Image (tube, rainbow, N blue to C red; front, side, top):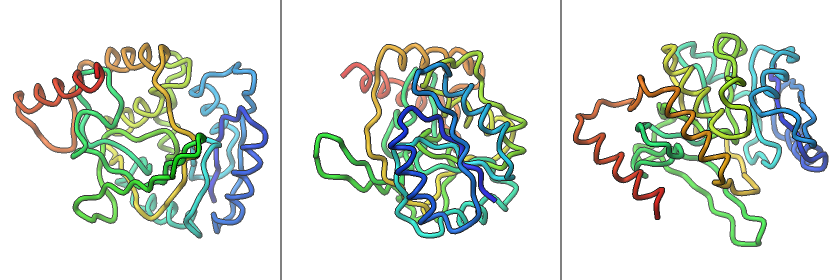
Length: 247
């Protein structure tokens, strides 16, 4: 019932997360791991390959450095995606995206929706992040974080990962979410699946280059949000984004 697609660079992490999934998912599943320890594939290429090999109708794309804390989370995914208005779900995302080459969590914390545990390899205490100010069962967003997201196979077939534009490992998630959103489907953050991300992300030269590619690709559609803002509000958010990137 659930095909889990992983671009794998570490056999031990893959083994750990597979055992964790076995204990927690609660429904029939398969893991389709695209071996990429040598970096031969970009993540878009790997995810398209994995989805092409999958046998189930619901796809879960995820990093291998995560652990699930929710029992029977697979059934929660199936139940949510039974609503055909919903095209994509994740555990973290943003309700607005400006024209600035920024992460999904900028321009403002008020627009973030998050449900995950962030751990750190340096031994710092883990942080449970829950940003759901209106206590919604599900929140509409326009972008999702690539740590974990799920969709029906038909959604991927209609919106394959753009391996021509994004050949590395950044902004594939925002781009996929934007494709799904622009196709008229809801993109959502859910709160009935809790995962732990056991390593933080990083912003490097590759990240910056792909951020620019994303903004150029979608320049005619940006800014975009689930709510309407006037030009002044968007300019203010873009200024906040610039400040955040420079500080």
